[in-house]
Structures are given as structure tokens and as C-alpha cells.
Amino acid sequence: MLIGEYIHTIDEKGRISLPVKFRKEMGKKVVITRGLDKCLFIFTTREWITLSKQLSSSPWLKSDTRAFNRRIFGGATEIEVDAIGRILIPEFLKTEANLEKAPRAVLVGVDNRVEVWQERRWSQYRVLTEKKADEIAEKLGNAEK
Image (cartoon, rainbow, N blue to C red; front, side):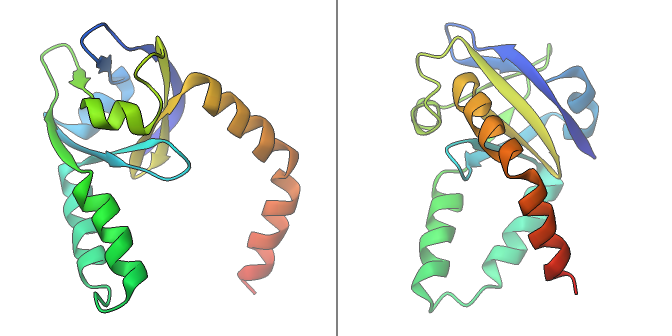
């Protein structure tokens, strides 16, 4: 399980270190793609295969399914994790998440994936969701009934 929040520097070549706690679980190759809420998603190869099967089983005749699949699959890149635990974020994905000029990013473990956020955007997102945390919990609790 991938959990926790870590702030790491993006170097001049566009590389970022994966947190030590994530490295063992993630392996030597990962898949990075466009996420939601203007962040990036990083998946283990195993989790990417599971997600791919799930998305591929969706009815492709529906335009929303095609659009979402294009976003996720079209933006996906398999990345090697180097010997010291860094990954190179492709330029188009840095632009997608507004990381091209950001010196630091926040890596957030969200169970089966890591999200990469521009530091300021993550702070804003957290403030916004913290204000609504009780309301969100209530909605989720009611949805389970």
C-alpha cells in the first residue's frame, strides 16, 4: 500500500526521486500518466495492468469511455526507475501538472498509486478539501447505505 505525503525537488533535467518508502513496492519500472485534478498518476506495472483491464472492459461505444481512455492511455509512459530511485517526468506531463517551472513537487501515496502535484496546487487543494472533509465523509457514509 502506498501512503504518505512527501515533498521532493525536481532537478534541472526533470527528474524526481521516489520516496524511499515507495521504491520497494514500485519496482524498477513504473507507468506515469495524466491524473485528475491537475496531478499526475504513477502506477506500478502490476497495478497498471489491472487498471488497463478495467478500463478496456468499459463499453467503448460510449463517448465518455473513449475520451477517458484516450486521456489515460494516450498520456501514459513507461518509465525506468534509476539506480538512486529517480524517474524522469516527460515534458508533456510536466506541462500537464504545471511542474515545468516548479522547483518542488508533492508525491502523495493514495493506496494503489502515487500522485504528483505541483506544491502550491497541492496546498490549495488540501485547504479546499479540509474545509469540506466532514461534508464529504457524510456523503460517502450515506452512499454506503
